[in-house]
Image (cartoon, rainbow, N blue to C red; front, side, top):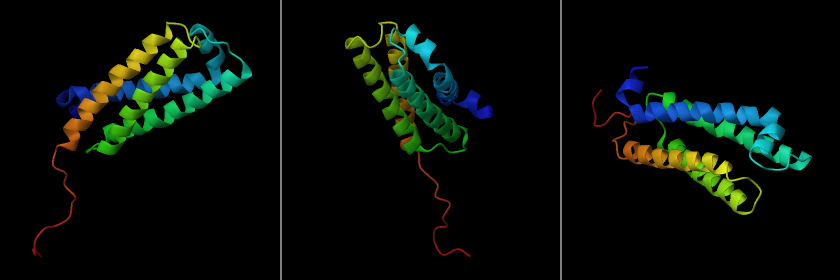
Length: 141
């Protein structure tokens, strides 16, 4: 856990990844009440779709957490997690504009946008660091 103190941004992103996994896991069985809270009609179709989105949140959040817990996080995983969070911001925002969700859902959207910004900042930082391939160089025995 020394890395969390040494790299607060990485620690914050790990906490967000855990939140993503947990909220996605809750969406699967409890999509109906959450949809009502967000102002959407909990039909069988919307509950199914919401549960499917929750499953993908578990997968992407888990993948992000996994890479952040590695000694050297994967820049590609961080990048694509940022893309996913940007897409989630757009999708929820469009849902609010189209009246699918209440304005309360904008809290979720802006949390995703803030997370995307943090992920892109972190991605730029780890992408510019020299990467050790572990391959020997030269002709040393």
